[in-house]
Image 1 (cartoon, helix red, strand yellow):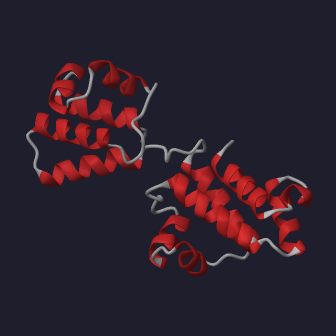
Image 2: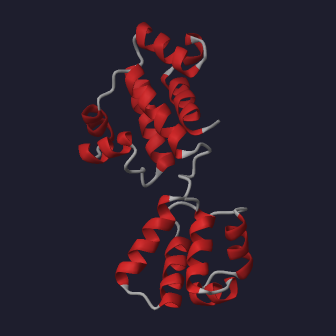
Amino acid sequence: MRFQEILDQELERLGKTNAELAAASGLGKSTLSRYRRGEREPRWGSPQIWQLAKGLTALGGGGDAELEALHTALGECLSTGLRLDHATYLSRLNSLCRCLDIRSSALARALAYDPSYISRILAGTRRPGDAAGFTAQVAAYAARLSFSPDRREALAALLNCSPAALETREKVMSAVRRWLSEF
């Protein structure tokens, strides 16, 4: 479900208006209107998500469990700050891992993350908290691994570029980061 659909569904369920949610959440009416039309979303991890969850909970008279459930539902449907949808990002991340023979445990060590967290990201059951930062770290690790001509050629084929375009670590990092996060 998309962000705007959750907002619409909750306001309809509560029988409340944008103006009432604006007053309860502290967000502007025009901001809420843009959210509901799908013209805008709060950034992933932003305080506006908490404000919306708190406002909706207050309007419905719910408690802490409802607040947490609303915050989770609103946050999970947001984009990660990258230009790709999550499914495409996940597919590309897993393709990169296969191409460079990166195991989740090795990736976890290299990025200093908990192995189970990395496994959940690769399985699609979790999203990175800072997707852009995570992507940059993955790109840096891929650059360290692509020093051999064979790996560089395989990576070039995956990224649809020439091996010459990946001649330095900086170029590899930039190409991988761009490929993972853009159209």
